[in-house]
Image 1 (tube, rainbow, N blue to C red):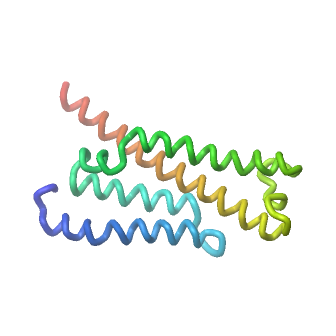
Image 2 (image 1 turned 135 degrees about the horizontal axis):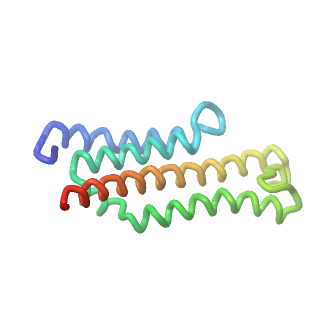
Length: 143
């Protein structure tokens, strides 16, 4: 597919909009449908589309596997860190009300950071699975 000019042009036009839509879903998740899981899948789908269109090597230069693994850990740590912050401030684990002076602001702040952790983790897991499946297929084809 790397030689298909129409697909390459469409991908170059569509992928930025996919990533912006992922950000919209991420930040709109507090107020309506969506959130971290959906945003993470959309962002990962944009990178998978890039890999299918421009080749796996190009996608791995854009988002290297070591970065994906670090993002995976960072997302989980962010999620868990919100819970630990709630404990440190005298609440229960993932008790958002203690994260600000006003409980409503604390709730909003907690949901924002938990959803960010979920989005980062889901995007990283989806990309890691994609990279693993592609590598497995290449190893089997070499044998």
